[in-house]
Image (cartoon, rainbow, N blue to C red; front, side, top):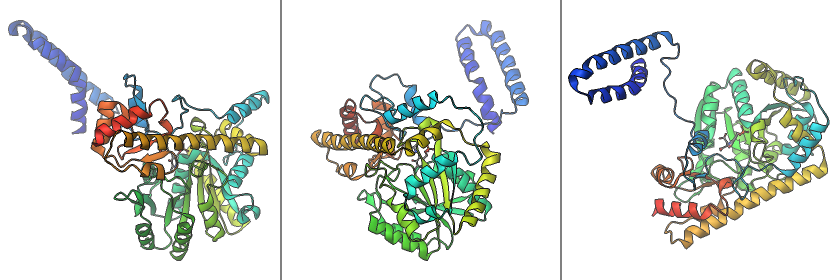
Length: 448
Ligand code: KET
């Protein structure tokens, strides 16, 4: 079946030739048609017989990254990419934090070598990354009982820990519904069955806390639960601190293993130093958490693939054993992580002034996003939209979970050349003072 489909694809250009030939006088075209058909049959069968890839079907584009590809192929002048969660400045350009530029110059001047990193990456980077998330006064950190490794950003850390879970007998993981789209294939590819717990109420565009607690209570004992530290993707709705306390006690009651994904530290409150309150609360409550951190968004280091994976253990000795297992999974996967991104983060977080500059620059990114939230909501109201858009300013982080349907998103894309994910998630990081009116008009048009 698939082979036949592949052969049909191979035939496609030539059937055009056939049609052209058919347009000629029948008697004159007959031999030509026969020759084309013969060569076609020959080329498709030999291709199918010879190529080991002949039964590869065309995979669909990635639901998030695929949008960037479609956007790049679109030549409409006012096209807008609000698909991937990547920050843009108010001119719609990628933004390199000034403090990152500064340390890059320092790194270049140091003329460092390009030796392999260790399997666990740069130890001083890992220590600083952990302090940044858990806080300097975190007891397990001070006691040296957190095992940490550098990872290929958040995605790589999630995959490594998924594999580790699987190899130590976990068969499933519970993620919020909805969650970041890539969580599902990451954990599936790591061999886990991906299940969901309630998180969001579409009716009133807010957190479904009761549903969440009820579902967590139904997770079988000892299973792994994935939690977003802050700025939940895609909904932009986080539990309040009191709600986190309740989640922590239910997770404890059920002896679940909390696995935190921290991809937006700095984009929730605007202060990177305090955005990890949920994680810190769980650690204070005595949970043996695992954590994945990404520096893609808050330091704008997307392409550098810099992140960390850490696991809180009972003792230093246990942390060493955990570390050894993390390394066992990393070594045959990608051997060791790249150095440059970790050097950048290490230089920033090891210097108080630079850390302050980073926190401030990250806060200004979050501030620009928030001002775009307000403008987008206001413009929709000014246009006379009858829908309630108040959730746009209630939500936090990089995304507006707009509530637009798949059909509306498709019209937005096809008619207005605005690219957002099919679940109606709009990356507010791509909204600027120049395109906000165009976006609002288009949203109003598709949602009338
Ligand atoms: N966790 C979450 C919740 C997340 O949104 C992302 C990326 C990641 C982890 C991984 O990021 P990394 O660059 O591997 O550190 N999310 C955006 C980009 C993407 O899909 O890859 C997004 O949702 O647009």
